[in-house]
Image (cartoon, helix red, strand yellow):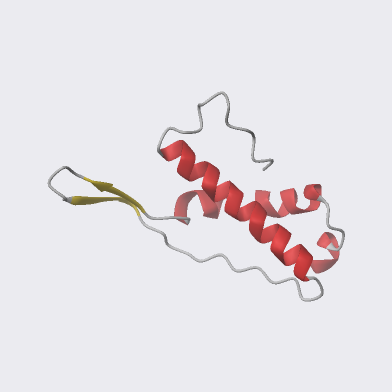
Amino acid sequence: MNNDYKELKHENISKLLDQVGPFLHEKSYTDLLVGENESVQVLSRQKMVLRTNCVDSIDRTNYAQSVFARSILKLQLAAIGLDKKPDVRSLGV
């Protein structure tokens, strides 16, 4: 698998994101709704931790991790309705 991602190219990381994307979408973060009387409703729970490690390249590890983080951020922004603003720039994921 590591040979597939030797070059630090976005299309290579995109293939990896396509593979783990479904897991990120359903298990990636905890979402709480806090009511006026400080009651807390759990809307979703984080069910996994994503760990990446490219044995021969810290740059590739950091790049992959940043792509996954931006992907999760997009999910979180969509959950609170901030993905619809016209001035929000694409996160490139």
